[in-house]
Amino acid sequence: MEEQHYAWLAKSFGRTDYLPLSPEDLAALGEAGETIEKYPGTYLFREGADSDAAFIIEKGTVELSREGTDQPRIVGRVGEGSVIGDIALFREHPYYSSARALGPVTAFRLDRNNLLPLLTAHPKLALRWLVAGLDQLEKTQRRVLRLMNRTVVQQVAALLGDEADQYGDVHLSQSSIATLLGTSRQSINEALAELKKVKAVATGYRKITVLDRTALAAHT
Image (cartoon, rainbow, N blue to C red):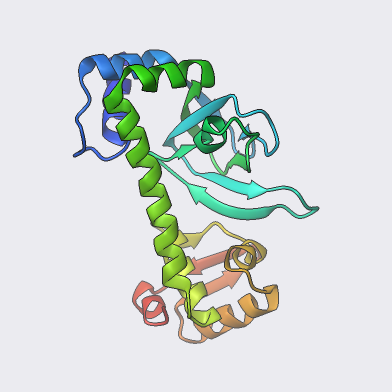
């Protein structure tokens, strides 16, 4: 079981073609943290709490949100291989957002007191950690650039294409989509109505399903 876990860390943590980790690196990484399980709706951490740990997501999806207002604002979703909580930890700042499990989540938790000495003693791990963070930043920038100078319909179509699971289901409410795109709920409703006309999507109570990815891509 321990060897299987180390193999997962080697495969999922950062780019696998970048600085292969030695058995000693993997053993040190595995011993510095612990695997945790989260039920749907529970939190890995809350906005404003002391950033005492960083997390590598092994299985499941985690929703990141800002809770400074009455209505939480969804700022992103992350899945397998993603690293969260580390920026606040490295800056010695409270967590910038809350991280909530959307379904069953398995994550590897690295306490601050273990993580910093680990990265100092193992340069390959430190570089792999940096690459993992830069990869997530690049994905965010690509999404922002892809959405710039586009109509709301094009932005919604692009977002739905990114967020749809293998069955076509989009696990985002219309209000969350409006928050992510910085527009109004009414504009999202109008965009979805246009996409429904071409049978690219279907909507129901708190549900959006992508029916035709090709038709959806034609509107991005």
